[in-house]
Image 1 (tube, rainbow over the protein chains, first blue to last red):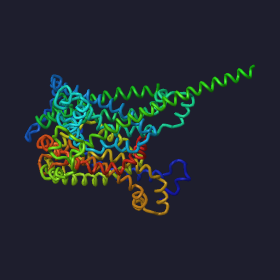
Image 2 (tube, each protein chain N blue to C red):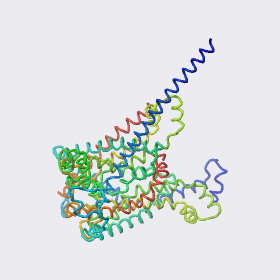
Image 3 (cartoon, rainbow over the protein chains, first blue to last red):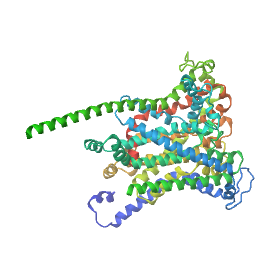
Image 4 (tube, each protein chain N blue to C red):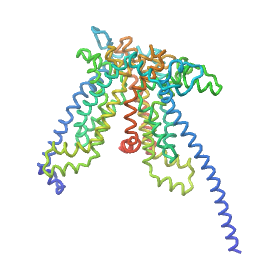
Amino acid sequence: MTAVATRPEAPTPPTPQRRGRRGRQDWSAYLLFVPAMIPILAFSVYPLVQGILLGFTDSQSGLNAVTSFTGIDNYVRLLDYGLFWQSFGIGLIWAFSVTIIQFVASLCLALLLNANLWGQGIARTIALIPWAMPPVIIAIMWRFMLHPTYGAINGGLGALGLPDDTNWLGTAQWALPAVIVVGVWAGMPQTTITLLAGLQGIDDQLHEAAQIDGASVWQRFWNITIPGLRPVIVAITTLDFINNFNSFALVYVLTAGAYGTMLPMLFAYNEAFRYGNFGLASAMGNVIVVVIAVFLFVYLRAQAKARTA
Amino acid sequence: MSISSDLRRDADVVERDDRARRRSRTSRRIWRVLQYVALVLFVVFLGFPLLFLVTAAFKTQQELQSPDPQLLPAQWNLDNFVGAIERAGLGQAALNSLVVALATTLIVVLIALPAAYALARFQTRLRGLATGWILLSQVFPFILIIIPLFLMLRPLGLNNTLGGLVVVYVVWSLPFALWMLRGYVAAIPGELEEAGAMDGASRFRVLRSIIMPLLGPGLVATSLFAFIGSWNEFFFALVLIKDEALQTLPQRLALFVGSEGQVALGQLAAGSLLACIPSLVFFAIIQRRLTSGLLSGAVKG
């Protein structure tokens, strides 16, 4: 208590008293961490390390299966596993398309919601709807929308006199694009709200000054809005990309991976829990982590360079 | 002469300005119209699917399969909701989801609160570690963590139990809860605590009488996020819960889609709608804050 009372008046070198207080603080800080630390270490850090290591074993799901270390065998096997790489390619197409389309659409929507239009409040609330829905329900709802005979999409196309018998989720040609649209829909609120928050953080005076100097809407967008928004853009696109690559529930319910929509997570899930190859599935997880890390490293370094340049 | 030429030049300038202004006024009007068109398109894209689901939930089987579909049902009847609860076993599934979500929320808040306080108030090496872990846990694919968890929970007898699911959800919700609560604690000025301490209040007293009341809204927001996260979760439940009587709501509905739901479209829609209610209510409550304070603070760090 005395330490607290004397603190304001003494910017002098730390007295023993003060160091004592510091020490006690550290100690109680660790104590406060204990309740959170136990479950984190036991059920998060340990399994994660274990999961990475499992990728170097031949672990199987059977209760009596003996697990042995097999080095890089799994990765050698994966090299020849055509279906896995096919799924991997689908995963990349999915993650990049969803992230990019989501970003462009959300930026447009965020700019509109920031533009003092009439009915903004209602639009903002509606824009949040997808966020409030469980992924499984989003998928069920879009199965309704995309239903070949009773769906709203084909109904609307029919009303416009366009072909109305496309089986969106049931043909190799349309399943992936359809699933990507649903992915964009599901992730838009989070991206929009984050970008909107970023937009509101940009000083209005910058825009006003530029307008007085005769800058056009486009010039202001490229030279004020985008640079001001850059940190937010980098953060949200990074997060979206990771989320999209790891996405599971949406596509599991929409197509279960049929018709060219077998995302890597679905593939790894089947490998582990349908065929029981825990080791191989963990190896897939490791490959996915490495690839995501490489993409993120390249992207974030390019962005950091652009900022300093 | 110089005066008249000056005047003429002035008039020229005025005229040119006028023309430019008129042009910019019409172009601005076109721009506004385009903005409204775009906004309406976005609203339809984001809002219509839910509207379609809501109306489908109230339609009869004949209406749903009619060759000449109407958007609104002829009569708003509740048969589908009753049918969904009875036929799809949604009542039990909803109860399971509720138990799991409530238990998860309670445990998450209880163990995150002290840690979040420590993260916000003390400069320790744990701070860097905790931030690193929070970020890292976002990047790793679930498959890497669920297989070892599955292998760990099996000998503990927690596989295929709601308790095991709660354990997984607690760990899974912790990073976000910690991060959120840390922000709320940091927003409370440390001077308040020091003032309390100077007045002779004990450490516990300071926490209980000064920090807790101020932290109320933050605790509520964090709890709601943890609750909704668990209520909506699907992947871990799919892996861990095999017993039909223990399945959660998303799991039950996902199963119903592939089986009877292919025929009983109305019941599927009704069940889905019921499963959305907690999250829709939650977002209706916090949406104002979500669009203003909460996230702008998060973005600015």
